[in-house]
Amino acid sequence: MSSFVTIQKAALDTGVDDSYIRRMIKNNDLTAYKKDGYKRIYIDMDEFNLSLVPVNNTDEAIEEDFDLENFLV
Image 1: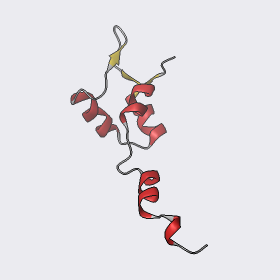
Image 2: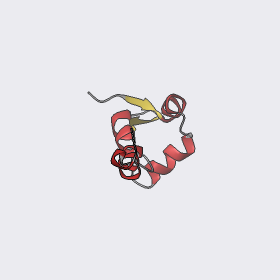
Image 3: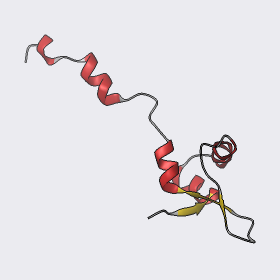
């Protein structure tokens, strides 16, 4: 089930600045939803969470950098 929240609430809950969320909407990375007759813009939090990816995956870096066969245990 989708959970729709306002841009301001999403920014407060996630710690991401609301100007960044607006930029994501402007760049078509997020879909903006609006209730008929109301001014507030809503976003789907599931879509927002899926759009964020880590800069570097630490799990892969650990596996590649440290081979326990090279160490005496």
